[in-house]
Amino acid sequence: MLCKQALPLRGHRNESAYTLDNDILNHGNFLATVQLMAKYDPIMAAHISSVQYKSQQRLKRLAKQGKTERKGRGGLVTYLSKTTINTLIQIMKNIIQEIISYEVSNAKYYSIQVDSTQDNTSIDQFSIIIRYVFKGIICERLLSVVPSNDGTRQGVFNLLSQTLEHHKIDPRKRLSDSTDGAASYYGQYKGLQSKLADVVDHHIHI
Image 1 (tube, helix red, strand yellow):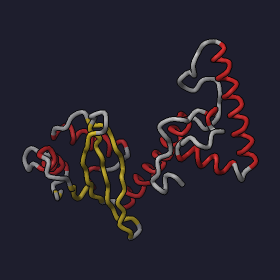
Image 2: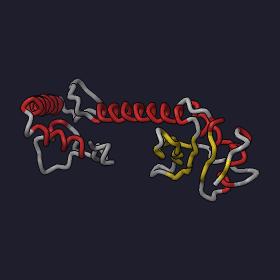
Image 3: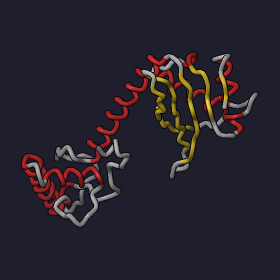
Image 4: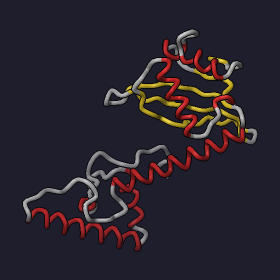
């Protein structure tokens, strides 16, 4: 539900199990949804209660030893931790990408849109959007967002080619691409479009 509504799952803090009994804190959308379910589902409520108790006991033991809460999974399995949430997100991402790959393969032909932007760690994130017609419906899907360490024509081309190959998408079936006006993308002789045209001679750049 959270992914369908394009909502972030995790919060920035207060994700530890021992904090779940505090309704004032913002635990993030995933844990808040679990807490809401626990109000109406006795099995979920029992699990939350057990997790809170075990987490609090663990914290007390650490305090007696003069230690603070350890980072990482520790010895408490809750299925509510950030490690589990991140694993679920990764699984869902893989399933979605497999569906897109299957649909593109059946559509035969496709086009792409690419661009990149820096994240808050100053690393370029390269986004690949793919457009195709599947069962008579025009589809536009975000295929992947991958870190880019080389913004040159060759670097961007290699990253795009590796990503398409990873998802078993044939580069020879690409009809066109669209980019912004950045020289590494748009340049007719030294841009990405010239490298793409070398692979597919009927390739159109927009």
